[in-house]
Image (cartoon, rainbow, N blue to C red; front, side, top):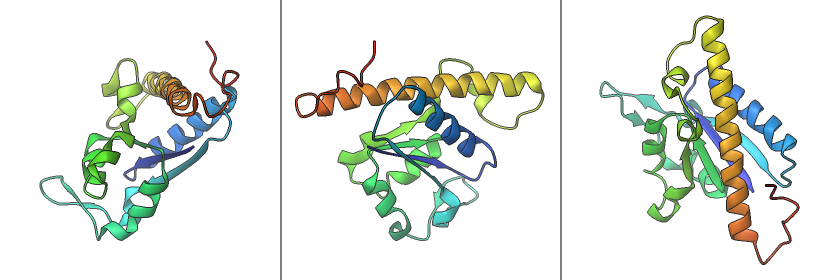
Length: 156
């Protein structure tokens, strides 16, 4: 299974969530998970005055999106941008990371200052990663059920 994390140039959020997710997926002993990240800036994405992202073209986006089983975006506007390049039937692959966080989502948006903010973000991102892993386990159970013995993969 391939999971693609997508961010928009925030210097620390995307790498931190990717690192944390990789650590938690390893601790959860879920095999055959490939994690990759991409910054939307690599696709030439910019924002115009209305805040709507623009791109230099779908050729920069297509392969990564098509190969991913799960696409995790950091912001809703990224999801909206990606749907421009994906068939409607694939939109369900896109997951907003904040939807997996349990509370205090406002702490994950915007600038961070102070130890309390960092601690809150760490807790929220950890919760988000754990909830995302639970969703991935359910996905694997649903899609691999009869084909592969995964009872050892799914823990209670």
